[in-house]
Length: 164
Length: 213
Image (tube, chains in turn cyan, red):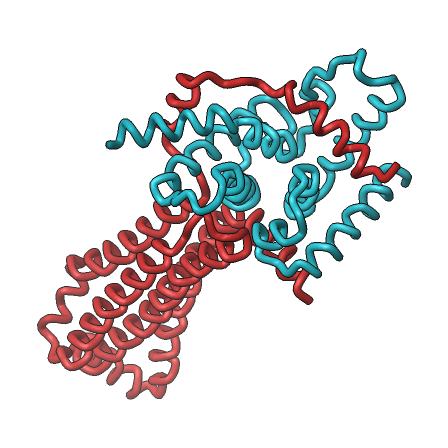
């Protein structure tokens, strides 16, 4: 039984692993920290999996566990604190798909997002993943109105970081 | 274009650029141990319970303190001991109950609240122990003053010289300084460990609470 559970879990996670990578991308600054966080999220997902009833989609459930781990449970390892190695860590973006200015702008944007606090990053993450305000408020435990207000503040904050 | 819209466009394009871990790599990960703060809180909390229980036993085994058995002090010692165990049982039950409610599938705010609630239980237990330590020390001192012949004789001598207040005052002051020192050291370690462990959680919880105002 346990083997079956392990098998179904690993298969599902293998299929949806991008969600975890994306959380790691926003919350860590280097490859080691990325791997650490990925590992911890995987463990938390696995620990919670026996209680996963399937009334929500596996991916929806992953967003919640992934963000909770990143925001609350994960202890940042020393090497990831206050080090900004985004440049070297950025995933290889195929150069031909972007013109220079857009690529440059994106780089700056990612750097700006890394300067946001953990909760703001969660809002941005869910927004980038096309989640509506109901799901954002459900995941974070705040009201929809407050989620909207906070999202607007985050947009303003990003503008300020980019154009000081 | 809105900054976030631009970011979203790039974000979606990057979808295929993430590393792809194999079945076996993921399988190996689920066999590893978690190092989440909940696990640390559990371990440290259990150590705290063990520490305070050991302290109680250490006091029992202490030769100097065994002299209390010769005194007629059961009316103080027995209720204090029973109270100590009852409170330990109560706090341990509360701690375990709160710990069990921590679930990574709750929303972020509820998860943080449950972790903080679990911590609060242990903090209250430690606070109780510190108060208990003070009460026990002064109860012990009272028994000594009341029944230890050596101290009673010294007190008589001091009284004859008119220094009775100074005699009692000195003992109480030294004990108080010792207690304050011990409590300060304990609180310092406490502040250090939990300051580091819960700094991030507290900061994020405050941020979420701030949104409600």
